[in-house]
Length: 158
Image (tube, rainbow, N blue to C red; front, top):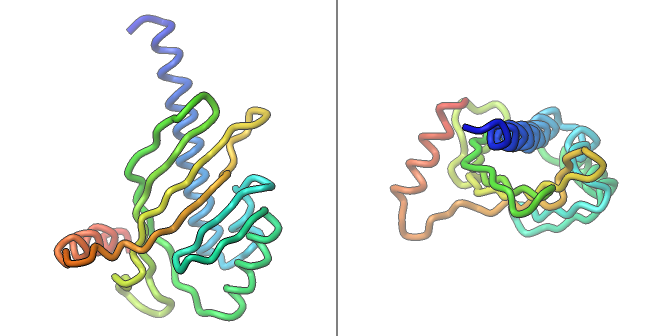
């Protein structure tokens, strides 16, 4: 590989690693049950579409609304697997992951809460932040074997 190509590849892998780290910060924030920690990797004007269709706009709203969830519900822990990261343009990346939830006090995941997640990250002033996040139920209508396979794969992380 030429020095120029190697430099581009090294830069790309560093950028991909940072986007992957954003996703881990997101999971860790949820699992810490802290609205502030959960919202920390988001951009100031980020948007979130939740599992059940709720929508949040802006880091402060994400922090406060998520904190209310933690205060009013016994949320479980997220476990996630990144499927891929790709770049749409310089400074814009998209991460696709699958996620499961281990209910509080349980040893196994709840298959009904498995999801497909999409995170759009943008780089501004040399810093990567989450600009948009969507959490879609992985219901696989009429294909129970796909649901079971995803649950089995995610359960290995518990």
